[in-house]
Amino acid sequence: MPTNRQIVLDNRPQGEATVSNFKLVTSDTPALADGQVLVRHHFLSLDPYMRGRMNDSKSYAASQALGEVMIGGTVGEVAESKHPRYKAGDQVVGMGGWQEYSVVDANQPGALRKVDTTHVPLSHYLGAVGMPGVTAWYGLVKIIEPKAGETVVVSAATGAVGSSFAALAKARGCRVVGIAGGPDKCAYAVNELHFDACIDYKLHKDMYSLAKALKEACPNGIDGYFENVGGMVLDAVLLRMNAFGRIAVCGMIAGYDGAPLPMANPALILVNRLKVQGFIVSEHMEIWPEALTELGTLVGTGQLRPRETVAQGIESAPEAFMGLLRGRNFGKQLVKLI
Image (cartoon, rainbow, N blue to C red; front, side, top):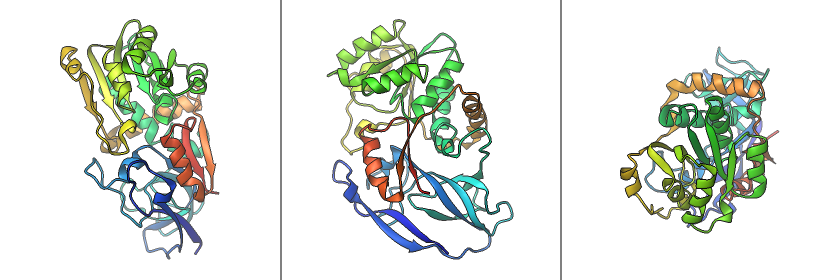
């Protein structure tokens, strides 16, 4: 059996996460039992939610255990199978974690899924046609419930979720405005992702300055907002929300270091009769087939051309993850493992 290189969580962050929180270890892959599949990972997904799992605190999911392989989505190829539904060479997506191989109990519902790479590249099943894309779909379709002609806004606009959100919202006839960090990302949002406008939050020192930019980009106000960031960005958006607006709360990356994120004007939720709903996409597996079908079609027809930032080798994962948390990535952050 092959040797497996793995990244484990060695110690918990004290404030900001660092590369030293992780440790590279090597182990032998075990022999397979009946019903198990050995997967050789081709790509590992890095996502903001992983930062929250590093903390030992109450959250929507259990904390990452110390000394164990970091959680993470993976795509790859079946190397060996003792399950009748899978054979060597099948391309699959699962939650293999930060390692080069994983042994999967293929009888466990949702543990492994075959994918078709005829029209969709394998890596996209970790982004636009994977969990991030479905996350965008659920927040837009089920919470924001957009109508043609409405204005919707998304923060972290050029990431894997934001990119998918733009394509899905444009397909529904919305005006789509992004919030991203830096002129290159904003240009990419408008020129390649077809946002109607994109605001560089780094040009604004407070919520009032950002809210003014939002007023210019959203002259008819904001009907729906997809939240990935929190903090000043959320405060600015609340100042521009229309009555009966809808906010889908997906992430609060501004607060992943553990400090509370105060809200400047919570009374605006009442004044504007806003719907504010948080969600975890893994709790809504019933919508995944519909969402993945639409997302796959958008990618296959070229209406969604997601960009990827790819680090090479499992040893690069911690540094790439730090870059993701600091906004250095363009589009979906991946680690190539072959």
